[in-house]
Length: 323
Image (cartoon, rainbow, N blue to C red; front, side, top):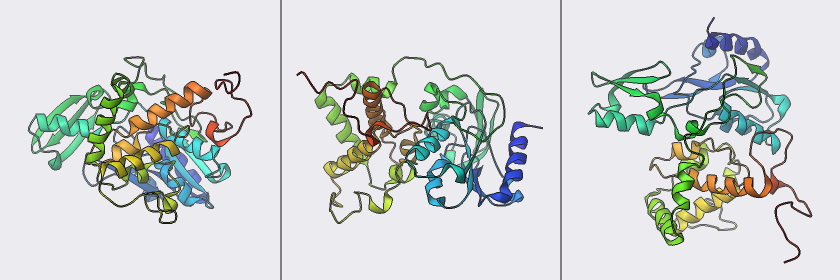
């Protein structure tokens, strides 16, 4: 029995006691898998596992609070589940977590770039096959083979959690974390190399392209105050609907600040952005500051309390006295 078939069997065994189990299924074309809400054995048979499972299903869990649900997770997804538990946004007794080891997911932007370079129309993708080392996409009657490492999502190149951090059912043997090619994240290294004026120009350029669709917010599993988001609140009225760089940058900075110490760097904000704006870099920058100050990494320890959600009279790495 394959690992996927074993996982399906375990889900079917648990399904009678659950509202549903959230996973992935084949999407509207071969390049896309989409979220799947399994409520019957027939639904479970649709479950997919592989490099096309790019979505983070943890984003749906707060919507099911009060009901018992299951969720299938990759390692990065499980960190989001842990963070939701830490903040009491979901209940541990109401969530059944299924996991398998993940060897990485593809970045569709990179795949489309490879297809474009080969003059193969991505919109006519007929099939996708992967053996773990190569991704072969047939589009417009042409098959383009691309090394998996060339189209792998950037986050996977530095992944330290290929296995679920927390799982009730885990199928398969745990695998070793990825060894990063460089010790410093490329996004942060590029920003660190800029002067302050250069950095501002960088963000103003990207914010000018933002269309304020809020896909970044909607895809984020930790953005749970959508009905009261500053982008839509009129009491108080934090932001206008003006299509200006200032307003868009204001939203993104507040969004990043609200995720300080909470972001698990699942990358959904950046993946969902239709304009390919590198919004994840803002969260990474704040995560680095939180790690340096509080020695804390989001979504790793279910019993931990995020540092900005608690108060201490004295912080070990913040010298408030004796200046």
